[in-house]
Length: 259
Ligand SMILES: Nc1ncnc2c1ncn2[C@@H]1O[C@H](COP(=O)(O)OP(=O)(O)O)[C@@H](O)[C@H]1O
Ligand SMILES: Cc1ncsc1CCOP(=O)(O)O
Image 1 (spheres, rainbow, N blue to C red):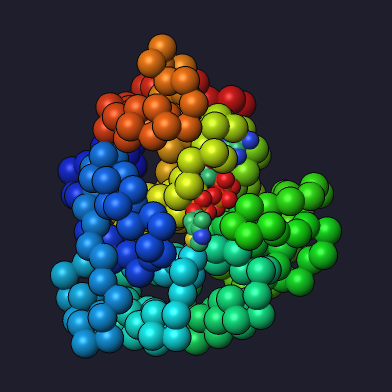
Image 2 (tube, rainbow, N blue to C red):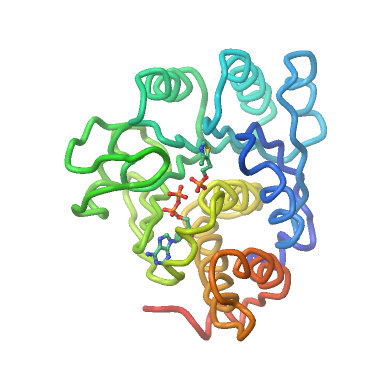
């Protein structure tokens, strides 16, 4: 059985400590693919949330000092329970506050995977070949070696997204090339993917396999949406992408895989 089918059978509940831009899209995207969302950053309850959830997403997109405190509490509770914790280092290279926060989270928590674009992953390891402009990656370089270097540095799974997606653990690398550039014109598509990845990581099985199926499913769904005759640009991609996440089957993924 595919991980997608297992996900839809188990409906993992994901606790998202995420940014204000993408809350609604993330909640709807998780429902669409077959998982379930809960959003909470209240210091009074974030630790308790781990008692009912299956995975935690820490996204620093619009972080405040209270959010950072909440991320440590939620992350520690999740580590104690043994459920996955994914870090999305949004715009990590933009300010030293973001970068230092990511490094502290990586030092103090057991992070199952880091999902970011090339600029964000490069910022985390201090690689100056890539730059960020706000939340977007700028520049070019070898994304495979970048992801591998980050996996070795942080000793965790790296899921680097962009035109080419790279999944790297300390000893294995997978490259994926599906997707549509239109995703880059819809805010929150990286952030939603981080939550979808968290949902896949809650399942039984090797992390690299689950992450690979997560990115393949997500990017193939984006192609199906982009090809819909009603889709004319980012505005129409948005609802059709949610519909594609809802409708996609393992057979669709297999058929469209760019090998
Ligand atoms: N040029 C592109 N062609 C195809 N897919 C893309 C392209 N750019 C981004 N994607 C896809 O868009 C999604 C979001 O990735 P990305 O834009 O890197 O995240 P972020 O929003 O964090 O910068 C990923 O699924 C990625 O595969
Ligand atoms: C625009 C913006 N600013 C802070 S968070 C955010 C959303 C970023 O979402 P994504 O990186 O997935 O496009």
